Length: 404
Image (tube, rainbow, N blue to C red):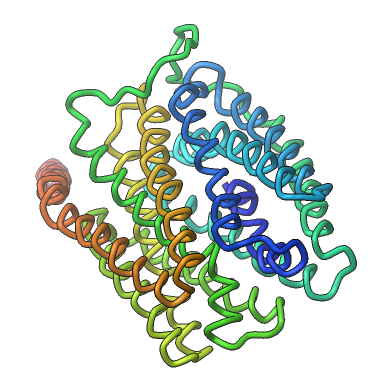
């Protein structure tokens, strides 16, 4: 999970260097960023249920292999074509590995500890983003070969994790025995409302990423006044740190509250980035990154928890893949569209446009949290009351038996 997000965010700190050294436009930068979700989308469509058939381990190893190739292409890149091809391989790799990794967090949890899987998945995702910012910022600012060394370090990490994955169990006890074949992601009829709620929450986190990851360094440098890549990376790592902190908080909250808080925080974050540009304040940029991290944590954990907890086990990987599919479609459309506005009209008009358009999507997510997930909240409350009543009845019966 951490490597998937590290891979997706690994070029964040080098995007300004591509613009400065190679003369690459903001539109091209956002297309390089978007090549990743654009490549990932068909992988989720065609192979979203692959791990239900060949096992979580096999699917993750295939994904790590593709990620390794993609990152190596960045390490050796000499022009934009290499970067685009590298992002394609990164998208393929993450598409093959991220859903089985998310599901494995649930399936390999100790009995009774499955609930923490969504929070742990979110926290480890944040670790990947934080590593991309801090390692990338440090190596870009102070190490030799700033356009290449960052990616060589990541390839070593991918190889190390691949070795660990090889010792995982091949299959889970309740895995399907059917042969795998290419087929569209299917959502059982009774689970479609749940899938919609989880998918739109995940999409909200990915839209936040469409602002922070391709444009975060540019916002920090041009609007907030940061002149050091490591400082910029540290500021952006606040985004990842808050994801980790609030992912832990998310363990204690119901999925409905997670989705509501995530949507509200997302709306606040995009407008704080706009305000950062208006007053040129590093402090406001820090606050915007922190709020965005908290909102991302709640959106991401809420979306994953909805689908992992309420999806049938035989369709769990397919439904989670479908949720990622919706998120990456939103990101694949949103990022290049935002980049085109920034190139044509400037960074501030682009941020304002993103705040209006993305904010409207977050408002829809807020409504979904209040309405669609209300029956889930009531059902969980009633289930908890039944468990408590059963325990009380059992305790009462035991008391009667031991009474003289």
